Length: 103
Image 1 (cartoon, rainbow, N blue to C red):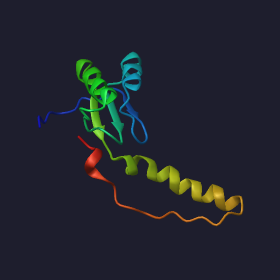
Image 2: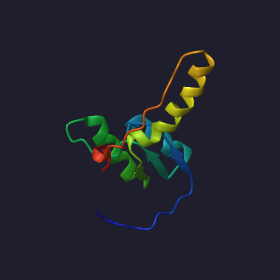
Image 3: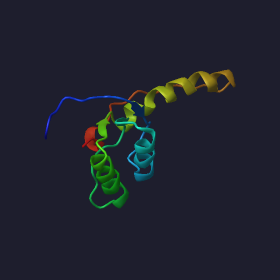
């Protein structure tokens, strides 16, 4: 894997699996050059994944994987308080991030 120094001008963060071609096209329009999301593995059998990486590479967008679980975990933790305020007993059960979705 090629390692290079990142030059971050503008950064966007998307929870979960944000490897969507339409998302990366919006990043280009907004002048964002660094994108953190949960799923970054190129899935050759899933055309949108391939297109996402193609557009990102053509436009010099740095794609950083942070795992699907890790990017959504804190929203789930915050929901515990919301449900408890409604009188619903709630507990967040921690897990380990899956690294299979990282490219």
